[in-house]
Length: 191
Image (cartoon, rainbow, N blue to C red):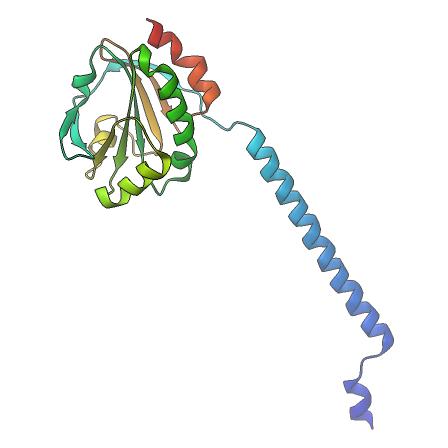
């Protein structure tokens, strides 16, 4: 008979377990709400690096286009060029692509070029990404990460604005926002 009493829970124990369960449920709901509010805040707040003003000659760099042709930075002398080092697996790179695309489309007719240089991936990995985002600007392949070496960075994304004379004027390490593009680059385009 004692064994039977030990296998059944007393009403007090059942209530205590229910309260503990409700407590965990309340904590879970609270955690979920906090995460949702944080995500909402993050999506409405721009997290973007501010560019560093620099002044050095654009490096010599020749890479391969998606069509398999060679292309060089020097081919773009006379234009303002934003060189963006990125990869398909990089979340901030993916997040900034629509912003870069919109900026390119707005300023391309004013002598602005954008060259997206994929770091270390194959044509097979890059082409679906380019199609998905309908990227209108040149995309180059850099399977050996030469651009990272000549620009002296291995951080992704990294971007560099080269003026019409071939001088690198701005450098971003991290994602770029529309606000910061509009704040810093149009003056260089107008020069």
